[in-house]
Length: 411
Image (cartoon, rainbow, N blue to C red; front, side, top):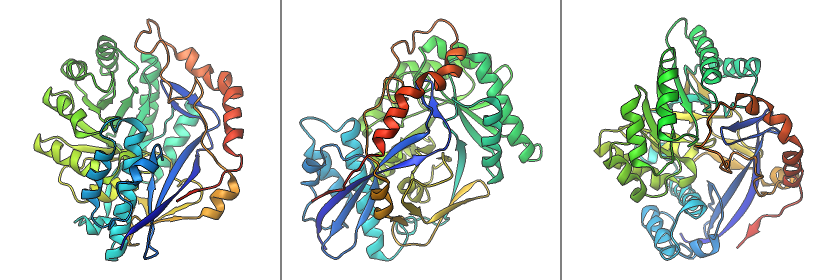
């Protein structure tokens, strides 16, 4: 069996409501989902969800190779990016190709990936994560009531712009999950997406902890700030979680060495092999790991095979447009199916008919760091509440652009 080519597509996640975080809000609730499909000479294709930045150069490292040699090919792809480095979306391209190779390997074996990797239990514990900073109180309650209906008893809210607003929103979700759990205390987390300085983080979390029991605070300061993350950890009761934006073990090592992480996170876009290696590094330091992402399919399969998986992020309950995934949500967990490989079926006709294509993020996108992030003196609750209305005009233009015709890239 040999790798012969690849195709790329772009679909979208249609949330049907505003989504965002402390850095920005998408009022139209549409986010792009890039797809990479790796082809072989035996007609078996693998699917990876992630970017295709510099994919021609990276694909050269695996073209003509046996796709079953996944971990070796992963290192070949990293070596292929040696001079320029493998940070950011380039690392995501490596991850998408890597995930697709794992998909192929499991399909050839005739097993779901979770079984191939040595998993015993197909149930992967989950927490609700609604990317919810743009929701009103009523919308927030309604959204988490839906999550609670699927048995989820832990939730991660977006915040960081106003202490009192965060306290109020956490209390609302706490009440929803407590009622659904018949009085049992839920797990509550807050994600601020690197919006604070060190002192802001300690002050904000300590104030919240007067009335709210936080399981963890996520990305309180910049992702690479080992000393800052460690200082926050010493100053608050909650665990410190971070790592979703780290690309490579070399970026985790100084943070773990400084005692900066209590919960080690890894994003789905970086691939299965990366996650397995991060999990092993964390396990060597007695730290739990938690996958991050809206479509963490590969990482969910991998999570069944490691000893230190804590819980995985569940964002939208629906898959991206044109994707069918062999899993479902029940009793607060992802339940993986028996389809060989990842269990992803791509309906290319539906995706192409919709005509989605990626666009450049606007200045108000959650993907663009605000100019005053980490430098805010006063709360910005009013600005956050008004953001959806203020940003509609520019972001609707992005939504229209995303629906123009696009054709898959083929090799």
